[in-house]
Image (tube, rainbow, N blue to C red; front, side, top):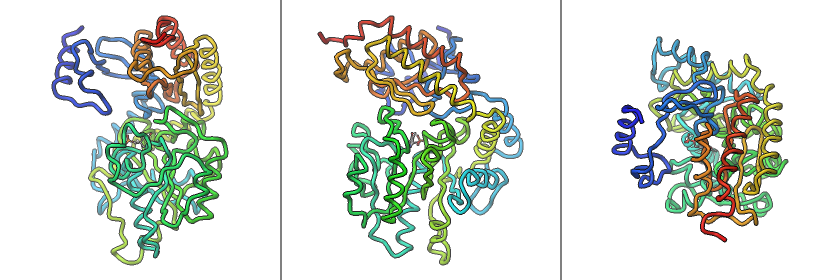
Length: 436
Ligand SMILES: *Cc1c(COP(=O)(O)O)cnc(C)c1O
């Protein structure tokens, strides 16, 4: 190990605290963390000079690859002007242009206002607060609750966390935040009394953190129809699905649905800078006009950061210049065929779930029973795949394969071959540790 690597690991293990991480294991003497130093396209390099395919798009953020020259140049050009200035009391060219570009993806008189913040959680927080304040200002103050889906994930700040349905993340914080009714299906929604409900929040087409589980086709359109009947606002969390992941720029376009609030973050800047946007309609916006008390009292210091806006505009340009969306059907098909072959070859693969360029590979014992959670099979497989040049992360025992959209067919083959080699080398895992 190089001296630099050793020094970085030591400083990290002494002073850093990582998200969603068992720090005891992370800091254990026999666990040298991987130090990543740079990237190019869908590839990442570690401090020892080894190369890996970024199979998880750097936690679902990266779209056009790392160090994309056009996005890097746009950020650099903006940096020469200013890195930041206040959006409170002023505007700037990038924020104005980006808002117009984002609204331009939707038909006129639909989503036409953009509120900027910093990450997926704040994009959701912002929609929730707008939804509640809207009801206060339109004579329905009792409509202050939300519907969210079991096993859903919408971020970790308190309001967003109160929507969260993943027990192992959110159980201990229950009781704080908004009144939320959790449901599993449209049938349950149809049975609900909507009179205290301001909005329903969903990850459209596929729940990410819930081990990459797609919704039934048509479900989003059905939810939109129910919202139209009941006056409940539809809040779409496209933090993960946005910017091409499902095959269209936004997942809601797949079912011709337009929400009342659209939350965007991860891929907004192509995965380069933290930035989020909450889009909404004129009908909602107009309830914040008229009297001064109706201003939306919300904001962050780095709202509409100019570097982020420049990166987002450049990323949208790359979508056009590289015809990113047009390139996807062939890649999605290739991924589909590759995963089917992988499943046929390895009985440890219980199910492959795919939505566009997003895939979850669920591992179970050959008799279809789940591995004991303590055996952490998903983690061991991902760790072993590093030796074959693939970086990804599991969610429990579901491996996530969600590479940047720029990944070529040959690079996809590299990822699939890495998994194939990993499963072949670890046949012991097929029967499950400590089981018969
Ligand atoms: C990642 C994610 C969030 C939270 O975004 P952060 O930027 O991590 O705060 C919210 N919703 C969904 C669907 C996500 O995947």
